[in-house]
Image (cartoon, rainbow, N blue to C red):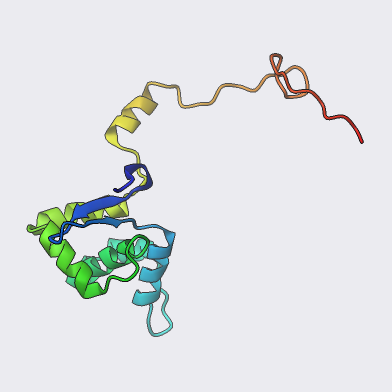
Length: 141
């Protein structure tokens, strides 16, 4: 099962297995390595700003599958994506979910607006342990 808090996406394959995709740091590095050529390094943020063709979409899903399903080939991942997302709009929604992993949801943004956006101020008295601290200094040896 996918952990949405970690930006994971799960789909049910035709074979009844649940596949989990996560576009984490290693997946992003893999994309950069695969797309860099002729001594020109392609950064992940550049990659996602360019138009996504079928090869790029499959590469995103394949690298995102490697954390939980390292033995799947690109062709197998392409078939899983085809089965899970029959419409191209659904595929693009899933790609956006993977790319924007960890981004705040509209509910998170609304909740953040209700707070003044600043942490409470530190206490100015004592040694920084706070007036109600129960911390005791360790005995010297």
